[in-house]
Image 1: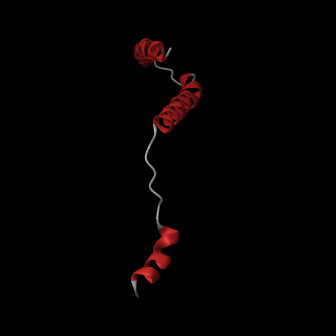
Image 2: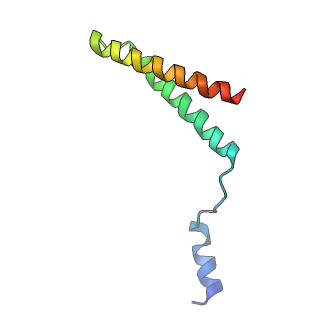
Image 3: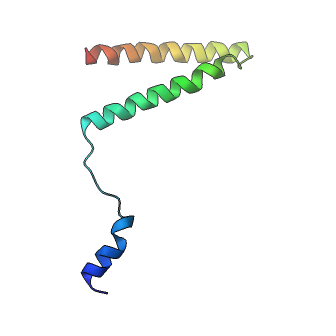
Length: 75
């Protein structure tokens, strides 16, 4: 098999490499935020332990403060 035949045989299985742009990174971040929100919202009502709810609330408030600081950088 010569180089041309090899290329033709493997071409359908190659993943095209594309440099990642800033817009691609931004889109990925938006999808992660959306996914986290979609997982958190239904799960919150299922947590019965008061101590765990308190800790989770603190974590979410801290995340909200950091998220606001990041959002302010985008403005």
